[in-house]
Amino acid sequence: MSGSEELSPAVTLAVLAAAVTHAGWNAIAHAIEDKLVAFTLVGGAGAVCGGLIAPFVAVPHAGAWPYLIASVGVHVVYQLLLMESFRLGDFSQMYPIARGSAPLVVTVLAAVFVGERPDVWQALGVLVACCGLAFVALLGPGERPKGEGPPWPAICAALATGLSIAAYTVVDGVGVRAAGGAPGYTAWLLLLQGTVIPCIAAVRLRGELPRRARPVAGRGITGGVMSVSAYGLVLWAQTRGALAPIAALRECSIMVGAAMGTVFFNERFGRPRIVATVLVLAGIVLLTTGGRPA
Image (cartoon, rainbow, N blue to C red; front, top):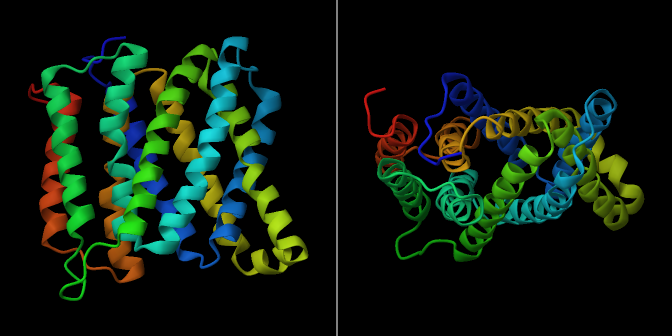
């Protein structure tokens, strides 16, 4: 598959829907103060969904299982890093950094390992979008006290989260194609990786887990179902389009995340985010049209 292949309208809509849903479940997880409990509920709901789907879909082909197992490990690392970045920083800054650092890395990895080399316009689109995301992430909304620099520990955690996103995007992009279909791969991925964080929480919290989870169970489970929907849509799209454009288009979720930060967490949508929005949208147009009129 050539990296210059345009995304179909169905794939584009699926990825955009995934982006909105992804921002939504991340906002839910951020809003729950106990991050370990939040990700336990999200992961547990995903595992239940995977377990319910698995008996009714084809088992992934043998060649997909190494990728599937690798993806489970990377997803667990991703969840732990995302928890840490949410613990250390604001949602409207950490979410853009985590999501925005992934497309450029995916483009490089897809070119090296999958042979998907973007054309000039797609490469320019990735760079423009990433510049916009970096702009809003590093400058922030202008609310820091005078003389206070960026929160580097939180930024480093979010950047590491972005690297893990890039890693599982490429691993799953290859694995789902080797699996013979997205439903089986998705079900087994959810089932396997969704049990790890709950097991960690059960060991660390012991008998406290049910008591601490009960007040936020509804929100956490809703977030888990949204997470399943978002990633299922992306995996389906990856069977029908090139990895790098899909990864970059998906990152428009950071604009949704910034809006959610303003509405739900009282975080300003300042001038840097307005400029970033223009850059991100310009990058998306370049990626999806190849520099030609839409």
